[in-house]
Structures are given as structure tokens and as C-alpha cells.
Amino acid sequence: MKNTFRMLLAAMLLSLFALPGYSWQKSFPEKDYVAYLFTYFTGNSGDEEAVRYAVSMDGYTYWALNDNEPVIDSKVISSTGGVRDPHILRCEDGKTFYMVVTDMVSANGWSSNRAMVLLKSTDLVNWSHSVINIQKRYSGQEDLKRVWAPQTIYDPEAGKYMVYWSMLHGDGADVIYYAYANAEFTDLEGEPKPLFLPKNGKSCIDGDIVYKDGVFHLFYKTEGHGNGIKVATTRSLTSGAWTEEPDYKQQTKEAVEGAGTFKLIGQDKYILMYDVYMKGSYQFTETTDLKNFKVIDSEVKMNFHPRHGTIIPITRHELLRITDEWGKPTELGALPNNPVLPGFHADPEILYSHQTQKYYIYSTTDGQPGWGGWYFTVFSSTDLKTWQDEGVMLDLKSEQVPWADGNAWAPCIEEKKVDGKYKYFFYYSGNPKNGGGKQIG
Image (cartoon, rainbow, N blue to C red):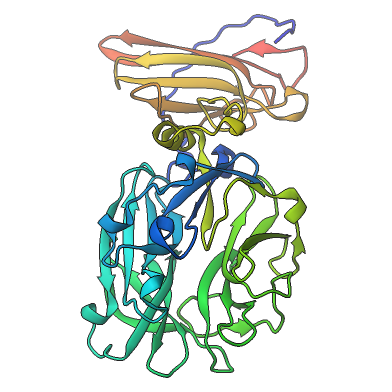
């Protein structure tokens, strides 16, 4: 930074962990996402009933990976040889993924399946799997006809992952049920219970739950009566207190199913997409309030024809992992660069500490008007690849620095062993409260 400094050097002993900050490793901040992953299947015959991947850089244009061929072998993971309706979820730890699919071959009939598959991965490439046959797993399911379209959501009240899906028993209506997954995501705990019962008592399938502003929004298909998408809302998933919205949300007169909703990265916009299954097409709509939707078909492009699927945001590392495995579509273009730290930083200083055997990065906190950052953060790493946010170590607007109140610039640090003990000397530029130009502290 080009400024005239009045040089005044003063040594300060600072703890590297003086002010603990938030942890950003529980889940990735939205700003770390660079692309979108679309999981889907393609049809009702042969290997069309299998999980496929597509990627997008903007949420509107999607390119299939692996030449639109399956990325998971249905015959290996399922009891029927086919899977449909893939739903993928990033877990609360930010690095584990759960996928659930319908275990079904449609050629055997629409009331032929009794099972779902739970899958787990940490790299989006290698998946462990467990078949859950509801009829075999639970008693009293003799008249069960079908198990369709499972999905997963984290329930903060229970502190567990809820799996929800629709089931049809005998001559009744399709009902959306739920059960919690075990900690390993290999089985279900407890008996399935009804999650949502519409007031009209008619069938509902293809549930998709979105959490926004303290409210859970359940999108569902009115199976057999209207064949459209409606929404019910609640503040507690298992309370049974659902408020049903009367209007249909699809923006077409054609029959639709398989609602999937996702948020656009860095925007207050959501996409509701659905399968226009009688026409062999897929429609995207856009909303800011999950109530009013507009068609954006003219903005959407795909080089494949998906059926019921889901879309999640992914990081650059995750995008590279799956494109390394299944090839990068030429149309995708150049991938985004690879920032070491999240957010805006300048003037980085790096230290290797012999005391902790870790690396530390100190930097100017950038992104403020007039270069007006007033605090320094520190990030630590053992491998120079993965960095842990250790929080704010020095705040010029706090009592830590009585002489300055802003323009925290260009830090540097030294580790010295004095009388057998490690000490740290931290130098930086600051804006003095009494004026006189930038000074070094």
C-alpha cells in the first residue's frame, strides 16, 4: 500500500489464539461454492434407471458428465437392478454427502417396489450403500405396494437426519412418511410415521422440503388428482402442524412431478424445477419467496433429458474431483481459480511455527470501503492446503489497541525463542486516533 508512514516500532507478545472466532469448517460458506451438481435418471428402460451427473457453472446451463452414462451401477447398489429419483444432500459437516434413491425397475409395474437405497460418500465418486426394504424391515407392511422418491433433510430439533418418502398401502392413498436415519446412514431408526396428511385425504408423493427463514416448505405432487405441485409449510417437521397453500406452483397446464428446489449461489433466488413427464421435458421456474414463480425456460440449457432429480452447489475441489473421474465437458470452459482463504484478503504474511508445527497466514482484511479494514484474522494449516479459521487475533477498534482505530494493513510476525519460551512479535500499520498519518505498531 502506497502511504507515508511515520516509523515507530514496538514489539508485542500476542497469543496466536487470543480471540477464538467462528468455525467455517462445519459447512462450506456459500461464497466457497463455484458450481452446481445435478443428480438425475433418464427414463424407464434399460440402464436409464440409474444415477447420472451433470454440472453447471451458473445454475442455468448444464452439461452431462460421463457422456450421460451412469456414474453408479444400479445393479450393484439395488435389490431390483434399477434406481430412480436420486436425491443428494450435503451433510452438516460440510464434507459428507447422503444420497437416497427409489429401488425400482418400472418395467415390473408401478406398484412393484418395496425398498429404497441409502448411499454415503465423502468424495462424490465412491459410495457405500444399504438397501432398506420396508416390507421386510418392519412388521405390519403386508399390504405395502410401493416405496417412492425418498429424500433426506437435517432436523435440528432431533439432531438427526430425517428420511422421508411416499408409500401406498392396499387401496388407500399415497402418504408421505418419515423415519430418522442411524448415525452411520446405513439403516432407519424406529417405525415409519406419517409426515404430512393433506386435509382432503388424497394421495401425495414426491415430497421435497426446503428450509427458508425459519420455515420448512414441503413441495409435493397431488398424485391422481390434478397431477401438479402444491406446498405446505411448518416450523417443526414432526409437529403435524402444516399450513396448506391452495394454489398449484407449476407454471404449465401439463402434468408434472418430481419437484426439486435449490438456491442460486450468492443470490436471493431459488429455482423450482420439475419433470413434465408426459411431454418428456423439464421445466425451471424462479422465485424469491417460494410462493410466486416465473418460467425461465429460455434461460436454461441442457445437453441431456433428465427425469426426477436434485441439484446442490459444490466447491471447486469437488468439481475437479468429479470431472477428473468422468471427464470435463468441453463446453464447461475454464474452471474458477483456487483461493487459499475464503473472503477478501491482501498483504499475506505466512509463518511456520516450530512450537505448534503448523503454518499460519496473517493478512489485511480487505473488501471494506477506502481500504478501511480494522482487524486481523489468522488461519492455520498443517499441510498448506486446508486452512482453519482461528478467528480475529487483533482488533484495532477494541481495547487491544488504544492508539489506533482502523486501516489495519500489511501484518508481519516473527517467532522467537526467548529464555526457553516461544514468543511472537507482530507488526502492522494502523490509523492513529489523533491523526498524523499511518503508523506502525
